[in-house]
Amino acid sequence: MFTVKLYPLLFTNEAAKSVSAALGSGAAAVEVGRSQTDSRVVLVDTEVVLRLVRKQHANTHLYTYIVDADGVLAEVGYSKSRSDPNLVSVYSSAGIHKHGPLAYQLVMYSISPSWLRSDSTLSEDSQAVWDMMYRMSGEGGVYERKWVGEFGNPKYQISNSTANNSRTDELIGEFGEMIDPKDPSTLTEEFFLDWLKDNRPNYSPEYFGQLWAYRMVAHDSKTEELFDRGHEFLNKLNELLNELGLEDELSNAEIVHGLAAELFTQLYD
Image (tube, rainbow, N blue to C red):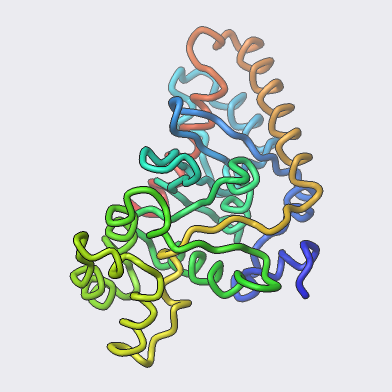
């Protein structure tokens, strides 16, 4: 049976980073909120960000200039579902140097015991993450999984998951057309699995990982240490802003949000 100590193997093909590896490299996990319902977990290289802030302090919009490949390692933005208090949806994600999967796991830690589901548009890299979550879920796995149609407003949850799949657009679109809100049976996991078996026997459910929501069976014992380091980083960032006379111009949260947004822009725009 798998144990939590094996979870860094979750994304073996992608050589994903573990909590211990992130701690060893000097990274920190920072959680910042945009509103009462939206938040972001951002994994940063603390020393690089502090150094770049100091270097660019003359520009009051410095947070749009300090980002480079080492300053911010990964980000996942997420929103609480309006239709189900136990479900949280990703609205943005990006990562470099194989830190992306770890950022998802940090979000799961932060929202526990709620479930995490994908956003409606997935890049090839993001699709691979959700597919791997499916493979490593179930009995003896690292994750629990739950069909998105089992949450509040099931028609919306399923339709949102089938809106734009970078790998199998046509197939997932065909399944979406089979959903009938007047027939609850079409909203079930069993219906999808039967449909897939009958219509695309060469496809496995693991290629459609975004149709399930996930949470970790157990979390790495050092995860809280990564967030504690994030609090320390925010305090240091505040001290630096005060030192540079920028405390009235910028907040540490604005800088972190700017880092995350710039990483996403650099990778996907």
